[in-house]
Structure formats: C-alpha cells, structure tokens
Image 1 (cartoon, helix red, strand yellow):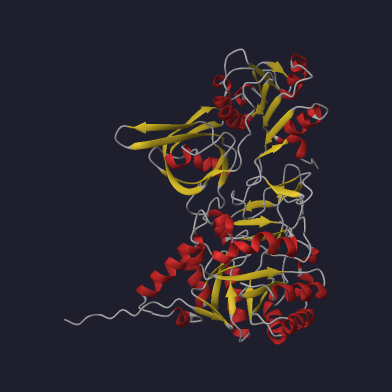
Image 2 (cartoon, rainbow over the protein chains, first blue to last red):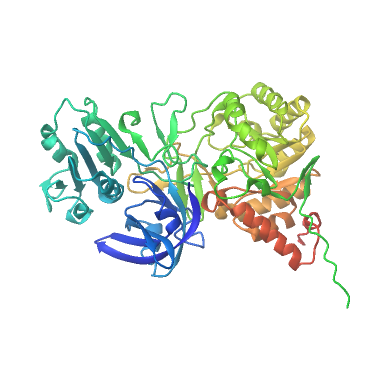
Length: 269
Length: 310
C-alpha cells in the first residue's frame, strides 16, 4: 500500500558524469517494495519545481536493527537533467525528503524453475528497475543487455553476474558499437526459438519502440516498464496515460495501471 | 478567576440549500474518484468531494503527452477521459456510501440535450448532494466551453438544466472570456444556485528543440500557483456581481491562499493542483483555516466571507 512519508537522506553522490545515487532511510517504503515499483519524490518545498518526480526504486534493504527494530533504506538512481533532479543533486545527508510510495504494479516474475531464458534489456536509468528485478531472479538463465549513448551512460553492469552482461554504446566507447537493440539482434539466435522466454524492458521510448517491432513475431512473454511525465503518480489525474489495446479504456495510466505493461498491449503512435 | 469561554468553532458554510461542514472541497479532475486518496487522508473530513467529470457516454480523452510543468503551474490536456454515466454509477459511486461528506457530481455534455438528460439521471441518484455543471473545459470542444463563453447560451443551458433537476446546481465557469462577471450573471439569472470559478486558463508550451508542442492536444489548461492572483481577482469581481454563493479556486496550495479567496467573497473553495502534489493538502487547508480563526478570535467562518477591504 502506498503511503506518504518523510525519508531521510543517508547519502547522495555522483556516480559518473550526470548520474547520481541517492540513498534514503525510509523503512515503511523500503520494506514494502517490489521490483518495478516507484516513488514520487518531492524535490522542493517552495513549489519550484511544483510536481513531484517519479523514480524507480533501485535497491532496497530491510534490516532488523538490534535496538531500533525494523529499519530499511532504498536507493534511487537518477540523471541530472532538469530542475527537479538539479535540486536533488544538492540534497545533503540528514535532510528530510517527502515521498509517496511504493507505487505502481511491479514486474510479474517468471515461473521458477524454468527452462526458458530471462532477458533484461535496458538503457540509462531504466536499468535501475531491471537491476531490482535481477536481484530477485537469481542467476539461472539470465541475460542482460545494457545500452547507452556513451560509456558514461552504461549503468548497473556490476549488479549482474559476470559473463551475462552484453553492452552496447552508440559511440562505441564501451562494448559493441551501436544501439542495444542492434546488439540484442546479433545475439537473438542464442535463444531457443520454440521456448516462451521472458523479456523485461526499461529504457528510452525509442529503444522500447524498436524492441516492440523486433519482438512482435515472437511468442515470448515481454513486459515493459514505461517512463512518463506524471502529475500525481497515484492514479488521480490521468496525466500519464499510454494508448493500449484495452477495449474498455483506450488510454491507461502509466502510474496506476502500470508502469509495467505487457509490451504487446501498447499501441505506439 | 474568570474562565475564558471559548465558543466552538463553526466552519460550516452554505451553498444555497447545501450545507458543508467546512468550506474545503476537492476539485473535479484532481481528485480521481476519491478512492485514490484513501491511503493518505480521511475523506470524510472534507467539506465536499467532486469526482472527475462525467459524460453520458464514455470518453477516451486526449492523446498524450497530457501534462507539462511550467513555472509555478501545470499545463494539462486530459480531455475529460471518463468511463461514462453507467460505469460511473456501477463502479465509482458505491465507494462514496461510506464517505461521510457531500458528494457533488461534475458533469458535462456535447449538446444541451445531453446536459439535460445527464443532469436528470444524476439528480435521481441516492447520495448525491449537488451537481456541478462544467461549461468550461478548455481542452475539448465538447467540454461545454461553447456554452460557457456566450452569455445567452449559458443562460439558456442553465435554465434548461435548472428546470430538470431538484438538487443544488453549481455552474463551473471558464476564465477564458472577456468578462467573467457577464457569464456569472447569466448563470445566476438562469437559476444557478452557485458558481464555481475558475477552471484552467488556455495555454501552450513549445519544445524549442523539436519545435513541437509539449502537449499532444497542443493547447491545454494552466492551473497551479501561477494562476492564483488572476483567479482571485475574478472571484472578487464575480462576488460583487452576483447574489448567489461563489466557490473560489485557482492555485490554492495552502490555507493562506484559501483565506484570501474567502476574503474576496468565496463561500467555499476548491483545492485542485495541490492534491496531486500533497494528497493531504485539503486537510492541511482545513487545519490552517481553523488556526486562522482562533488567532483572529473568530468563531464562524461565514463571517469572514467577503471581508476584503478594497
């Protein structure tokens, strides 16, 4: 159940170029979250910026403290791009931060044990929710494809078992030169065509759209976690919709009905 | 020693025949169907709740992107997405049975006939305290803006709907007119029990890199603190122009904002954009108003209405 609560900044540091890692002490959210869920974070008390910002919950830790009882903290991986994340980058240790979460439906996990492969494909900060998912998947038949424009945009690779990670950069500064979708296409033959593999996607819209074309003909089970500009994050404003094949409701809310959707449900315009 | 007698605070206000326990109303379009807020607040504490507007038939709404933040404001073009009357009464209305506050239904139609038909059906529903007729959505052609920008059409529509229903009728006005007092008077003459204002201001934002609009619908409605001073001026003007109660809204983020609107003549106020950011905003505003009354040694909020010394 989502709640509104104050968390406390434990750490806030740049990891590379414009990517930051924010660690927040907040047991009530950290202990309740599932991979693929997010929080709405208030970056400012003076309405600049006005709206909260949505962030995937990257890693979460529950700790049973001998004296303080059940504790918990979680991490947000963010990219300093606009007014909100600019403000966040100035958050200091010990500072209070108001949160609403955990929000949205997380990923549906693949059945275990399974003979099928689990394939994660992501780019930029989209890797945060995939990493949270990877944490609960175990290393069985896991394959991870990470993309970015340059080597600085390759995130979370160390969160996965070595030898399972495939990297592509558009400028060729890390891994294979090209997009992560190009790289995935090169490797696609390694996955048995007859099996219903599980694919999880999170990243920029262009990447998701190309993957939607690539995977269309396959009978794989593909889930995508969508990014969207959000108003409230908890289903009240209908600002963050995506067009879907749902006949009852053409436009569904990314925040409440998602952010994870079956890829085949999305109608790209 | 003399005991100081503190009279109980009376926050109740009247919107025509409709009595609210306090003047704070959750505005349509920013409060979902109430249930979205149950994790965060006790909904029964509100003066009234106005769920997202409904039409006779379901409406898909506008293509995304539907929301864009500007300085101190939000531009939205949701486009009145709603499941339609039937789904509303089947799926959304039952929830309000256990909520101990006034339920005001916001509605709109494409034609006068549709407005009348829908208002009749809503009037018959149990548990509904009043109706708010939207003649002011800036985002869709069928959202009533045609009715809300012409005084004669406003008058005709309001009188037709008024004749068809028994419950209190609030008419929600658009600020996108030359003189909002003219429309307000037409609504009053047509038989409205109250007017609520303002809806959002028609506005656009341009992405300078793609040179395209930031909203899928190109034009959206601006809300939030950026519009508050204009909304406040309009509420004050309308308060002087009509005798019926005025419900004020537009960028109210905190109790101080709400008190300004009440001083300007609003009998009640609606919280909109603020709900999205702090789901407990309306409750905070009620608490803040209470504190203000105590501090100013006032026992009744009604005495504050229109006290603006201009």
